[in-house]
Length: 139
Image (cartoon, rainbow, N blue to C red):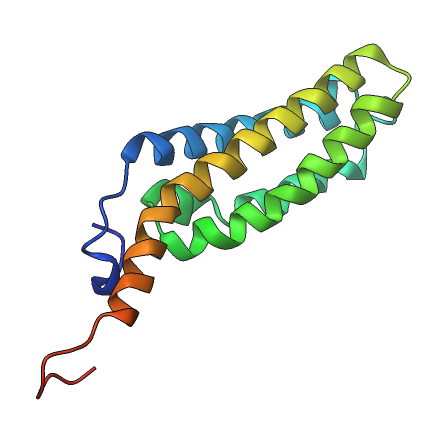
């Protein structure tokens, strides 16, 4: 299992992992399509397509279920939630506005799924830190 030994007591629900992974992959595809051919800022595409690059950084760790990656990727995702909200509310092109709302929804679902996936491990870690160790056991 991808989690460390300190989190081995935690039971992680793979459904949250699969949901977060699907949202991340879908968000990458939506952003690529949006900024290249569906509704780019400039005809023919724009440099805004580079916003996909930060999403590629956590992809491997998210697909493997790495808890640390889930934690920082959830924070990264909030940037995409904000961009989706701004573009969904302000973009004059209806397709671009709809893609903004899609970005917001995918980002929020990823964030919630990531938090729900990591929560049991964080609880187990806090519990292990509070419980006393038997004499002679190194920590």
